[in-house]
Image (cartoon, rainbow, N blue to C red; front, side):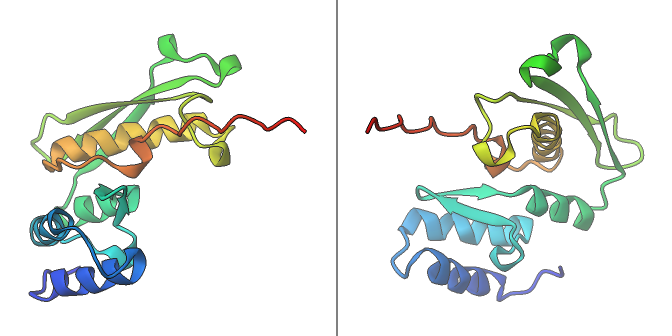
Length: 161
């Protein structure tokens, strides 16, 4: 997406539609910075607002990497730290922001205790996504956390009937 002067205004409109018309001043200020610096777009699914904090999505990070002409991403499982029977995986990703770049490394882990019930059974893919996200955030100096890096919230206790 090409940077346009009205990206912030479009993002602000989308944010107000999605999260209500009365956004905190800190939230709108941060949205302006993210719009200007990263050219991320709410309508494209690049950003989410959770508990008055912005989180970039995997899609948003990939959009930034594409715009900045990322040279490549390499991911591998750290076998010594993985336990498939327990659903525990650790991956290392290296992002090459240019051909001459030595690379930016990021690690990601996932197991049933820190992933949403919606992705249980896909812990290896979640570990890979988290590793890539951390490496992309380092490579492109993105200071906000990605939503995929957030662990799941504890499940509420089952009520006994």
